[in-house]
Image (cartoon, one colour):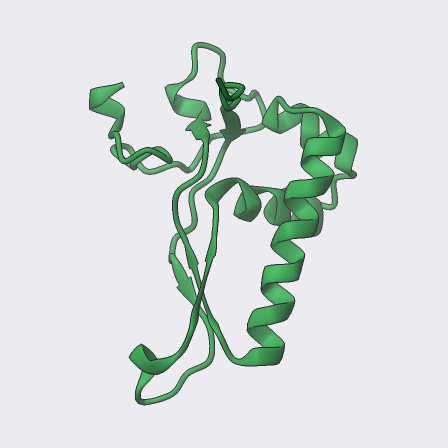
Amino acid sequence: MPRPRKWKRVCNLPNMTEYGPYIANKGQLDTIIMSVEEYEAIRLIDLENLDQEECAARMQIARTTAQKIYNDARKKIAESFVNNKVIRIEGGDYKLCEDSDTPCGYGPCRGRRHAQNGHGQTKENL
């Protein structure tokens, strides 16, 4: 029996879920799927300038897990830039801070009120 997946804490969902080259026939481009936790790792490390240990603490995961998530996300971004692919952010194993018994404490979480978690369940269904 496989080990159960651990939920990663995510404070913010992206405002947009697709990024990539602008061309008229966008539907013909290959798509790379980036998980919500990969997006969160990029946001915390590159935008908020946290180190991997601080990122891991915020996401409530091990530092090595945060490092793997971050490295996977950077590889996907590089592949999108170099090979003209669209990045779509969706899915993953995460819970929003606002859905948690203990909010993150790092300011207001901007998660969408009825956003879906990584398994297609809305906040109302959890």
